[in-house]
Image 1 (cartoon, rainbow, N blue to C red):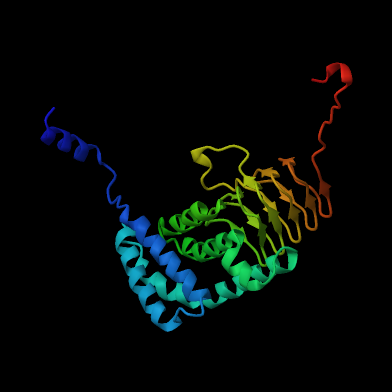
Image 2 (image 1 turned 60 degrees about the vertical axis):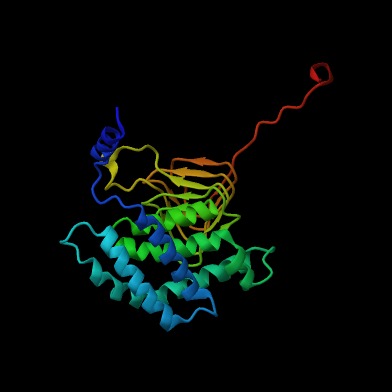
Length: 264
C-alpha cells in the first residue's frame, strides 16, 4: 500500500464531523484566563472581559455545530452571572479555610488547594452547561480533573459553602445533588448504581442534604439514595440506600491478630 492510499484510507476513516482538537486547547486557555480574571489582583477585569468575549466567540465557532442553537447569545447572560458565581466561590474558599486546621490563610486556599480549584472550574462550567452550550463545560471540568484529580461533572448541582479536602480521587456524577455546607474528603465517589445509555435522562447519582460530612474513600451510589441532613458518612463506607437525617454510617473493619504459632 503506497503513501497516497494510506492517506486516503486515514481520511476516509476520520468520519466524525467537526472534531477539532483545537477546541480543547482553546477551552483550557479560556478557563485559565477566566480564573485569573476573577481572582488575580494583577489581572485587569475590564480588559480581560473583552479578551474572554473574543475567546468565547472562537469557542462558539468551534463547538456550536447546530445552527439552530443561539450560542453567541449565551455570553451576555453568562457575563451577568459571573459576580454571583464569584460570591459562591468566595463562600467555598471561606468554608475550606474555616474547616481545615492546616489552612493558614485564605490566600493559601485560593492558590494552593486543588479542591478549591476544582470547585471553581465546576461552578464556572455549570452555568454554561445549564445554558446548553455544547462540549465546552465538559472540557473545562476535565481540564480541572487533569490538574487536580477531582472529577466533577458540570451537570451536578452543588449548593453553597462546599468543601473538598485533599481532593484527589473525588468523583461527583452528572445528576448528583449536593446541598449547602457539605464536606467531602479524598477518594469519595457519588456515583451511579449501574450504567446504561438509556438512563441518560434519569437521575442516577445520590442526593446529599445540608451539613453532611463524607470521609475518605466512601462510596455512595444510586439516584434514589439520599443522605439526610447533618449525617456523617465514615471512611470506606459503601452506601446504596438512603439514610435518615442525623445518621452516622461507618465501616467496621475485621481485625485478626496473629498468634505465635501462625507468626512468620
